[in-house]
Image 1 (cartoon, rainbow, N blue to C red):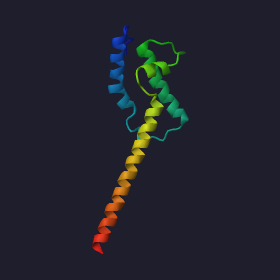
Image 2: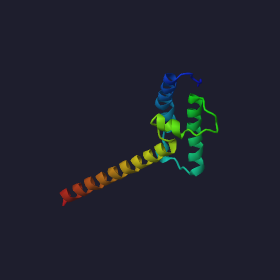
Image 3: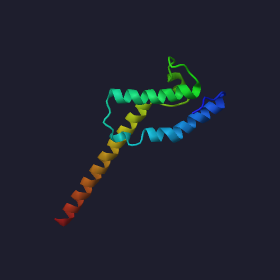
Image 4: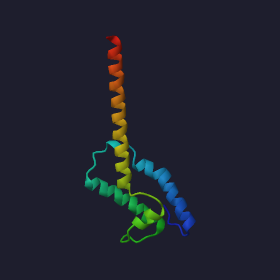
Length: 108
């Protein structure tokens, strides 16, 4: 990806990255066996993308840029997707149990 010069193009580039690259990066992250090293590597990839778009030095923190762009760090996004996946799994499991019990009661 090329480094852009003005702010409008930077925001547009960020929107493209969030629209096209982020879903590819996070595909199936709900079931990844992640440890702190893997999460750190994914954070580095995401932060380097911000540095490349906004032409920052590697020593600069990208947290102010993420705040300005209303974007969460990737580790938070992965945690959020884990929680939604687990919540959905339990809802389906409870629904299955209720339906099974309901059919059992109707047979009796």
